[in-house]
Image (cartoon, rainbow, N blue to C red; front, side, top):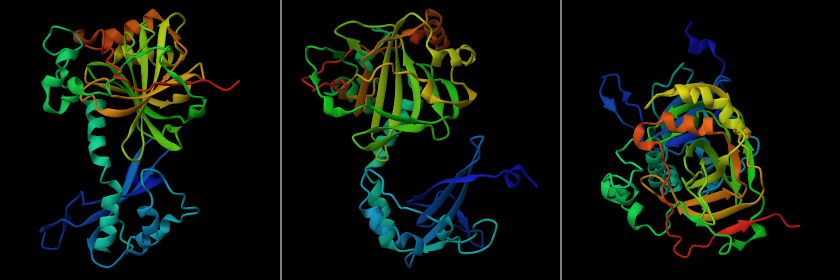
Length: 370
């Protein structure tokens, strides 16, 4: 018996793909591509993943999807509570140990699923570029590939030069609008498997399981990864600090929300303390398994924050990012900053984009009501 049969896994989610991702062989061995594929995703306590896939052909409505049609149509970019849900109602259509044939689904059901995710793909691709891109750009001015030239290096990066909502910016207290109704930043983080990655232009911790979320304006943004920039990218009243942490989240519509925390030299940061030896060992384009990492260790230190709409701070500089910058300047040791700088290759020992024009953007400031 192989390890897959011996491992107990727990169902995590169910999702549909518009076209089948794996070819389905007829008895004649002719490859046949069907109209849709259902993925039932499971995980075990060690972060392993197991997926059961069922292909569908366009024909009569599928009973399970029929019970969800109204909710899918009204879903939008949020979520709908289904109440108690029995995953056995999905139905595999047989008792084989794996799927050998296509199930039926109506053309109308396929179209509803297409419409529900039509606006997500573009934003996800842009985020993927930011998350894993190793393209030839640098932070060195005058190199021909520095921040002022990013928009000329790739046709997909034009917004880096001509965008009107670029980040980072200088956060001037004299220009912000105090807005108590923004409410406390709600975090619901959970321990999950993670890796530390050297992406060349930064050091990143990426979670593999479900590490929780933040909630902004009633919308869930799931935690994906975090990375560091040195010196800080955002400035406070013209002052630049020694380090900045970006915590990246994504909602179901593909929209990005980033929490930024700025640091000055002082006592070591607890989160970096747990990661320091791994950071020192990870080589360029490599990653090291960290086991279970609790993102709740990341300390904000204050309930006060700035909020504005900006962009990713590396190519492709995609705009529409919700930025939350914690007001309190926390501390980090010189050794920790040195380790982050030395881990990446020489061209990125300083990996902070210069501040961009605010272009009249509204910057809100949340402070708890007295």
